[in-house]
Structure formats: structure tokens, C-alpha cells
Image (cartoon, rainbow, N blue to C red; front, side, top):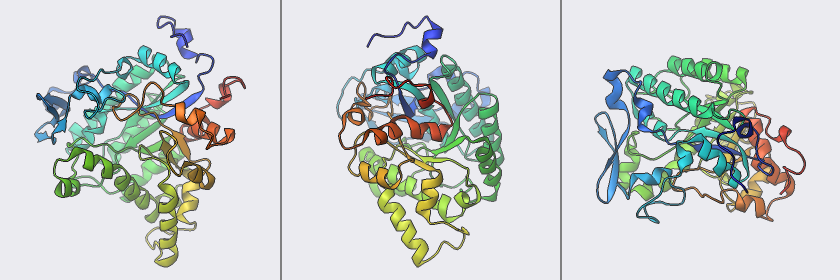
Length: 394
């Protein structure tokens, strides 16, 4: 497939023939200049990399992360984890939207919802004003990146976790000023932040539900966000922490949203649990349904089973043809979206969509749901509606 002419903005707005997939969870990697507009008194909170010969760490104010073997360039080098590449080469699309559009077309991606990378670290800051200023800086930079091709690059704004009113205020700014189609926070609960069932979050849930804007939980391992329960068990063993953290935290976030009645009270709220795969939802929602029947969730005022709330308004993402994907689609056909994780080292590029495009384990209808239609439902977009029959074919 030929590369796009980066100088022709009209062409950048229109996917090439054959680009029809919606990437529901891609990433940017914010450059150091994203922090230049922070007030001087908060610049020490900007996360940065400390590279040593055989490992790197992240630093944020007075917090130093655990050691991560390899070089920090792996943050933006698909398929090049420190285990696989000694000198990873970063993908230009991590910071350059023109390069990203060309890379998207290589994998037949028409639209990408974009999440930050260093933004995954700033939510460990529990001081209220620095936390808010960091989110604003990331969101402003992401808005500039997406403005290069707003029909194809969809911003998802990071929310501060320290204060519920600040979270609502930044959500409104992301939607009404920056034009984002979603907002997100991390799934953890740690000292210094309100729990998900805090009454202060009710206006946020109500606003997002009314605006039909997606809310996502997005985990990430970096050593700057408090992770005591994992460090107590695994020390600084990065790969062990990484393996456990994502599914454990997302299960707990889903449990909170169900058990405390958030989904019951806000039936139009769309909630995604990203970067953890899709197949886990079948046995875990079965478990939650059993607990409702056996013990009840007396603090939630539930009128539906947990699995019914999930089918109505929740989403998970799949990066490939994982074991159990077809079964998950059988149970929750409108709730599974595709995610590339581009350009992170544990993602795949080129070829992020290849397995899902070529597999015989899915029907054509299931493939279309996973690769475009369900993401349109999540983010309130019209990618599928803009496609011709030829573009939406396999």
C-alpha cells in the first residue's frame, strides 16, 4: 500500500481504500516539550527517564520507579521489548501524527482512539494542583496531535484521580473544548484518591452518560503509581508485576462499578476495561453473577445481573485471536473492540490487525463488530458508516 502524502491535509482526512479498522486503544508517547507549559513550581512532577547502562527508571518529583531492564526507547518500539531487542528503534508515529497515519494504513486502520504513555504515570501524583496541571498538559498536547487529522485520530483525555470535582472539570474541558470522544483513569485504588464509589463521582458519571462520551479504565506498570501489594509480593520483578497487574486491577474496577451500583444508576454510561484481553470476562462475569445469587450485592441496589450490565454498557479489548475470543463474542457480541497498543513494545507492528483479519475462528459479522462497529458504539463515532462495501471487506 502506498504511503500517504503528508503534505496534503485533505488526503490525511480520508482513509486510503482498504483502511477500515477502528483501533480502540492506541498510544502516543509524549515528548519532553509537553511539560514546557507547566507552571515552574510543578515541573519536578513531570515524569522523565533515568537511563543507565542496562536498565532505566522513571522519576516523578521525589518518587523513583523500580528498575526496568533495557532501554527506554522500547516505550515507542513495537515488538521490541528489552527481552527481544538490545537497541530498540522507536516508531516515528509515537510523536508524529503524519507518520502515524501512514503506519495506520499499513495495518488497514482508518480510525484510532489515542491514549498517552507518560500520562499513565502522572496519576500517581496525589497532590491536587500538580495532578490537575499534569493532566491538562498531556491533554493539550494530545489535542494538538489529533488536530492533524480529527476524523482519524480520536483523543481520549486523562483525568486527575485526586479530586472528583477536578475530574469532572477536566472531563468537560476535554469534551467541550478539546473535542475528545472519551476520558480515562487508571483502575487502582491507593491512598490519597477517592474510591470509585465516592458520591463525588456521581456528577462525572452523569455528565459522561448524558454526553454519550466513553469512560475507560486503562492500567499500566511503571513503578511511579503506588503498587505496594505487587512490590511486596514480587519486589522489582517487572515481568511478574506486569503479568498480574492488568487483569487483577481491571477485575477489581469492574467489580466496583457493578457492586456499588454505578452501572445501575447510570445505564447510559459506556465503560471500557482496556489492555487486558477479552476472554476473561466470560468466567469472571459468571462468578459475579453467582455472587449476586449467593450473597447479593447489597450496596449496589442491583436490578440486573452483573453480566447484563456488562452486555448493556461495557467493553473490553482484544489485540489478537486469543483463546476464548469466540466464546466471549458469543456471550457479549457488542462489547469487544480491537486494540493495537501501538507503539508500545508489547504491541505488534506492522501486522497488528493480521490475525483478526485472517482468522477463520470468527464469522465475517463478528470480525466487523470487533474491528469497527463496537468501537463506534463505544466512542460514538461513525467509522463504519463512512465505509463502502469494498472497504469493509476482508
